Image (cartoon, rainbow, N blue to C red; front, side, top):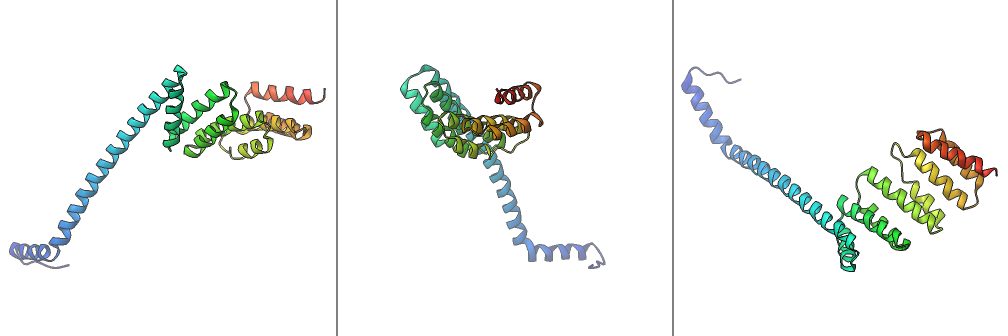
Amino acid sequence: MEMYNNDNDQVDALKRFFAENGKALAVGVILGIGALVGWRYWTSHQLNTARESSQAYENAVSSLSSGKPEALAGAEKFAAESKNTYGAFASLELAQQYVDKNELDKAEKQLNQGLAAASDENLKSVISMRLARIQLQMKQQDAALKTIESIKGEGWTAIVADLRGEILLSKGDKQGARAAWEAGAKSDASPALSEMMRMKINNLSI
């Protein structure tokens, strides 16, 4: 450590320090201020973008109730262009519209699109369950089994087991369906779902 005899020595040392390091300090301060300004701008931009996406989603979805072709086209455009949670929600809404019209191929397309846009694991699980059910309706049992394999989150074990049993039964695999329902009934199933799966097991022997 450098020793100073008096205040003048300290002042001289400070002068030397700033003479030698002043430019670096100035750059550091400028970078620090720039980073702070940049962070605030980015945060503000993200909030504005989220608000705009939310409003656009509300507009697109609320217009679907009109039943007009242009409303459907607008919602499809929003869902296709919004690679985020709002786009995934829009795809879910559109898929339901197509299910109601019995246009299952279009519903499947929307759900696959929503699955690609979603980042939240629970939302992905919801979309995957709906997609698997539609694939089952379309007699695409193998595709449906593959779809539910991606559902791993907590709370989904029993629901997935119930659907797996339905898919396997539709393929004529009663033994596989029984095993799926038995596993589901022993898992984290609600009392109602557990009872329903046990009823399905009993019906297999009829």
